[in-house]
Amino acid sequence: MNTLKIGDSVKNFKGIDQNGKEISLSDYKGKKLIIFFYPKASTPGCTAEACDLRDGYNLLKEKGYELLGISADSVTKQANFASKNNLNFPLIADENKQIIGQFGVWGEKKFMGKTFDGIHRMTFILNENHIITHVIEKVKTKQHTQQILEIIK
Image 1 (cartoon, rainbow, N blue to C red):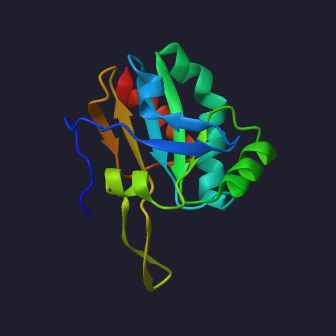
Image 2 (image 1 turned 180 degrees about the vertical axis):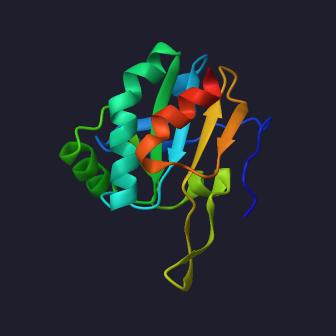
């Protein structure tokens, strides 16, 4: 896994969000951005993380940050996930794993004694020039907003 690191510049990417709208990194030109990758919509950990970020989104916006979630789920699954949980930020459906690959968050995982390939739950914090200022590798799903706020203060 060749994950992007602090100091790396993020190249432009495009994807489709839960509403069928094309979203690209260039849409956030001049804005600070938090990009969180999650393994699978509507699973317990991903739901806890997304709902915590939903509840803390205004605090992140007050600090000048926008928020973007990305997984390999379909647009339909992202739409259901967003609707069911009243999520108030875009979720990109990266089914072909282009963005996931660009950030280097796809790789070998172990769960319940099994080894498989999947998305590593990680968060990248970008400055206004889309340079990575922080990477969170050990995401606290139920306190992710607080985890981010402690980093960006």
